[in-house]
Length: 308
Image (tube, rainbow, N blue to C red; front, side, top):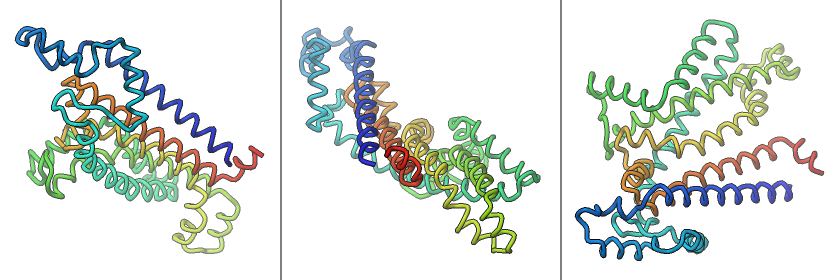
């Protein structure tokens, strides 16, 4: 177990370093961020040079990279080019809104997807199975921006049931929540159905059903524990991907989270904010993958034994 933990940690650190390095150089070779903040036609050259020195952009690229890495190791994310405030403070203001949206989406995804998948498995081959899986495929195939716009048109424009954007009340959460959770619920439903079908063919499950055990007891005692490994794996990836998926949803519904902050920062070429948010998004995915690996090893003793 310790060697598995160390190898996964090393892989996570290397992946994070690659993401940080690629993001840093790509952002700097795509143009001068000072000229995005100040028009050279209306701003005196000395002002532009002042901000280049202030933000360290007058230094060689490798020197900037070393300064950036040093700051990260000391817990400094830099200062926003747009408003001059520390990036950590700006992200801390927006992060609770994104965490609220992601957390509730994860719960909704499980509440819809898990029962739907098991329900379809117990009706394999019947019209209800085909109906549930067809809905899952359609939900997964539909881009989130299309679904979001469709929900706005139906619920906010046509029937005026819910607000189309903004925040402040529980009603503002409903449409972005459904948009973010729908595709992931479809993934969970498909994996839950496949895992349940595989477990339902095991001898002890067939014996329990033949002996007339209540269906709820069979699901709770035999099916869910055995189907946990593939479901934990996919749920970990989905949890990490929710951070990235929130970008489009927050932009569509004007939700004041870090996804919308990233789009605003990219538009303004606020390098410090973009770098910090890319690091945050990739870090969430890397941590999710790491936790999935560890959960997979804990749930599957054969992996631990194979390492001995």
